[in-house]
Length: 101
Image 1 (cartoon, rainbow, N blue to C red):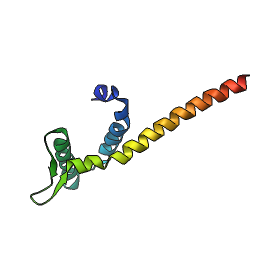
Image 2: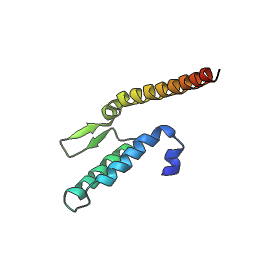
Image 3: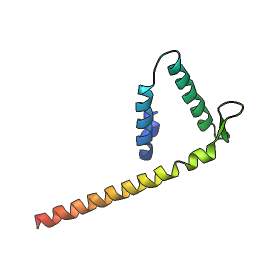
Image 4: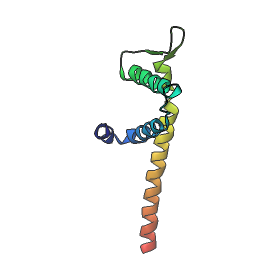
């Protein structure tokens, strides 16, 4: 898993966040077990590319497309953060060159 994620730098933050949050999940047989099963269910639906919705029960479902659309704001913010970081590095390099003059 680490090798696959490591080949895609943009996945590092979400992967690390998922792993850290999994470490915080309770391990008891009541609530903890149910939370682990809920995560398994969501992962199953998201990893199966032909599923259009996540069925919670016969009356409740989450549209996968709407769930994916909800991530667009995060993607935009992360892209802007990356651009600002690159700009900062460039400006710091320029400042270092000026100081050496």
